[in-house]
Image (cartoon, protein in one colour):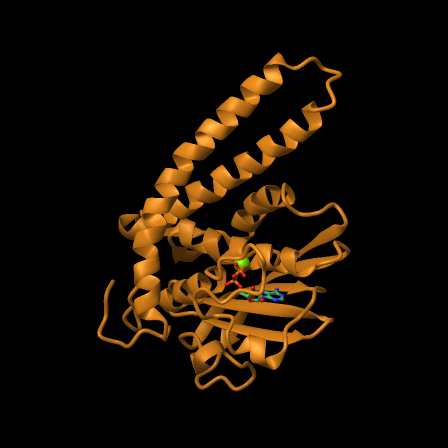
Length: 262
Ligand SMILES: Nc1ncnc2c1ncn2[C@@H]1O[C@H](COP(=O)(O)OP(=O)(O)O)[C@@H](O)[C@H]1O
Ligand SMILES: [Mg+2]
């Protein structure tokens, strides 16, 4: 898994430390959330049906369950270093995650899917691909500040040529040439300035009051691990498009894999 190639991610050292910290915190969180879900369901069971506090407690429970699911993902991700690669149908994985995401999307944000009819599988660890999809979708949903807008998720197949010039790959690193699966996520949210765009992949960079600034640095790390590429285009007040390219298994092995930092 490790290679002598330099990592495509310039924030390697920071990410490595964060990886260790995150695993410890995620374990503690998981226990706390189990307790919160348990206690709130006990409280609900004792409240009469017409009690006005019920809907508040139900919402708190939903949020805690969602947080527990995210924590499980984080742990899977942290523990997945030894997990085997498997053949993954990206469309299927997207569908599985949509139901999870719909629990946090505001009803006024419309999530639209444009999935390719049939996609060849990619070879990867499920938790890694899930992490990429979730992080990009959550950011897209969060960018729609007034709660009204569209998030469009596309999948497809594209052949990347040597020295591909059509795209501006982040860090100037294009995927291994050849057929790639792509995952494109477009939102009609707040968009970003050029100055912002230069910082978004840096760990801890966030513009959100409760943000952690780790979503995109993780995505960049994972995409590099699979010898893929990522592009981003954005316009203030109009929206943003991220596109992740992942080479097909037939292309992998042509180059050694990058080192994963977590
Ligand atoms: N789809 C998007 N639209 C607008 N801004 C975005 C989008 N995705 C990411 N960003 C910007 O990049 C920053 C870093 O994102 P991320 O690493 O996921 O951390 P976080 O979401 O915790 O802030 C965000 O705080 C935001 O400023
Ligand atoms: Mg984020």
